[in-house]
Image 1 (cartoon, helix red, strand yellow):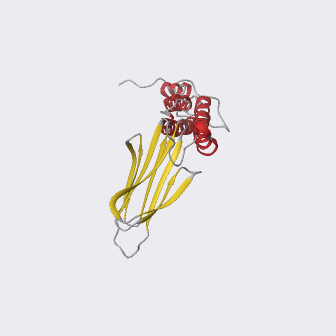
Image 2 (cartoon, one colour):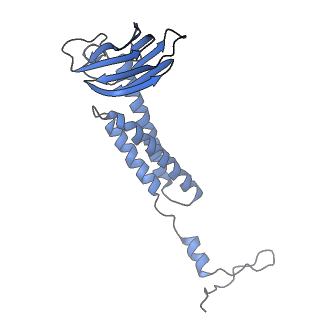
Image 3 (tube, one colour):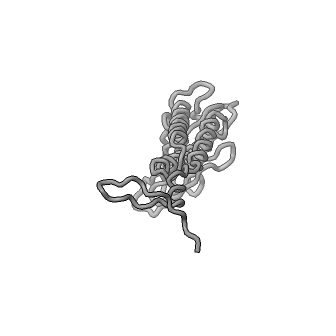
Length: 221
């Protein structure tokens, strides 16, 4: 039966000899931490999120990319601090880039929502000739109060009690917008099912139902 060779004893401490060090223990002590795969993948996702933020029509993908990159980067940083993995500096970089990507995405959304105007603004009501048409729809058998538009520009109207859909119109050319549509019943004594939907260029991008209130939101642009 083979056993690990034993090396000479280390110098005695306090008059007691130190236990012998085996080859296995020596290899473990000299082993370098492995590559931090979590940090590497997190950094790649963070860079992808940062790039996608500036690509029209697909910038919304930056949110899941940046979020997942941040989770992996933090996990890699924790592993590096424990000594289970190396590349602590890479993990820190991945965390910083992930946060920067998320902040940049949020900044772009806020800018386009609150500060864009003119040709890049959301027009309420719709303007003929704009590239994209937005339709807000509400169906309420008992009637409803409707608020629709974007975060910084909304309209309020009353949808009549009808099985036919009430519609509000908007349009835009450029930019990204967080569209909102809220409908709440005006007759609490009536059992009422409220349906809301948001369509962009005829394609449904949000839909919801409720008994007293319905809320639809969509990030477009």
